[in-house]
Structure formats: C-alpha cells, structure tokens
Length: 384
Image 1 (cartoon, one colour):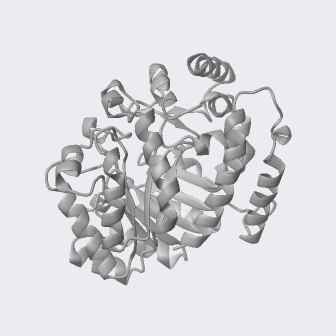
Image 2: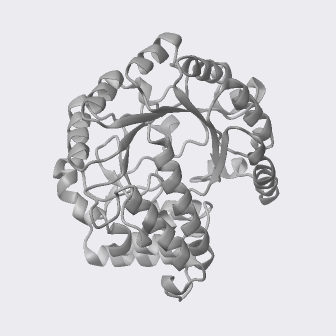
C-alpha cells in the first residue's frame, strides 16, 4: 500500500539530501548550497502533488509503530538490544487503537507495524483490521519465522499493503550464523508464502562484515522468490559488541559499486540507504514520519534514547510542536548539524544516548533549557 507514493517522496528527499550532505557542519546558509534550490523545488512540487505540503498538512504522512519489543531471535546487530532485554514492553490493543484513531484524524496515509517482532503481538491481526476500518493502509516488518501459509492467508484477507522480511544471505550457512539456526529456511518460506498470496514483499538485508559479500547472491535469490525490492544500508554500530560486524570501507565500496552497475538490470528495486539521512535533513523539512515506541514515547529517531512527548499527551496535541522539533530543539539541532556517518552513533553511546542498554528515555519536551544546552554541547564535543 502506498508504495509508489513513498517511492516518489523518497526519491525527491534523497536528491535533496545529496546536495545537503557534503555541507553538514559548514558555516553556510542552506539556500546558498549549490544545487539546493533545484532539489528543494522538486521536493516542494512532489509534496504539493501528493497533497501533503506544509501549508495544508494535518499530520504526519506515515507512522511507524513499535507495537512490541518482544522477539524470538537474538540477532547480534539489533539496535534495540532485544537479546539483552529482561523486560520487553508492548503497546496494549487499546493504546494502539487510540493511536490509530488520532492518526486517522491527522489524515496519515499509512502505518508500519514494527518491533521487536510485531507478529508476536497477541492482537496483531485485530490491529491491522482496525487500521483498515479507519482507511489507513498497513505494512509491517518481520523476521518471517512465524509467517506460515495460514498466517499469509489471513494477511491476504486483511489486504495487507506490503511486508518486509529480513534475509541476510543467500544460504543458511551465512544467515544462520547471524540470526540463529533455521532462520534462513524460515525467512525463505515466509517469502514464498507471502508471494503465493500475491502480497507485496520486500527483503531487508542487514550488511555486516560477515555477509556483505553475499549481497549480489541474495538479490538473485530474492528475484527468484518474486519480491519487489531488496533494501540494505550502512550498518549502525551502537556498542563495542558491534565493532567486529562493521564492514570495511572497501567492502562498502564494492557493494555500492555493484548496486550502481547492476541495479538497472533487475526487474526488482535495489536500494542502499543512509540511516542518518532523516537526522541530517530534519531541520530542512517538516515531519514526514512519526515513530512511536512500545512504551508509548514519540521518537524523533529510532536509533537514540531521545523522545519528544508521550501518547498519553495526545498525538494531536503534540503535532504542532512535532512538525518543527528538528529545527527548534537544541539537542536535535546539534545532532543534525554534527552527525556525519552511521559510525557516529557509536560516539553517542558515550553519552548514553543509544538504545543498546535499554535505559530511560530522555524526554526532550520536559528537559529544562539549561539541560538541553548542556546536552547539545556534549553532542557537539563528541561529534567534532
């Protein structure tokens, strides 16, 4: 659901990002960046055409809802640190329904059910059904281990928009090394079940030093399985445990070169992203995607323990502030100004800002100004 919409918006945003990225942290006005004006105009026209420009936008275009942090796997690269969690919170059905009600009032176009492993939520199907009743398209991400033929059949009945399955290799020897024995076969079977019911299915490939060489083979497998897209991005390290999993610059270069040279030869879409892009571009755009944690906090970025308000305050009530937090909040402005690459998340771990140890969220909405000044200075110190 809304694949073409999100693709067009994503492309326009990426073009804007390409001219902004090289100028991060420089003492230059964004309007003076070469190529910015043309990219900005294209972005504006795209948003206007999609009736979501800031002048008439009522709410976020898309929302990611972490309905549970329960997970049945122990992936070593989980940015949510699911394997280390002693308690894995979940949003109760009533709270999810309340969120959907508010998002419906804000005219959101679609939601993504995330986790953890969202299919572990006891009310998973009811949540999809309720969102459908409000006219909201639903997508979700999954490790695929629970998507049987019967499960896929039910998803088809509910007219699910699309499903993203994690597939980190083209054979079990590679993927099972990362995610656990049997995960490769379960993921492949999940994809087959989904495709058999004509459900739009994408593959997410987490590139690490152990499997990045297998990306081309994984694309070939995905093509044979009938998926519409294979996605990957720079690996996000958040703790010392991740250091050995970070691909080298040479490995990244080979991967990106292969994508650039070969993506046009495949009937499926192949994308490689930058996990920092939503942070970097934040001050220049109003909010597009809203992320809600399984504890009910509203997160400016899913990678850090920073929140801005809670669903108990009402998303509708918070939206006027949420639109501009990357521009107006000192802490977020420091992040967007000084963060350079995905490796900077590891530096922010020194400030206890990553989610690796599942610490308390820092609610920026309630953080006093002097504390915001202090934290923004500490961020600048670590990132420069």
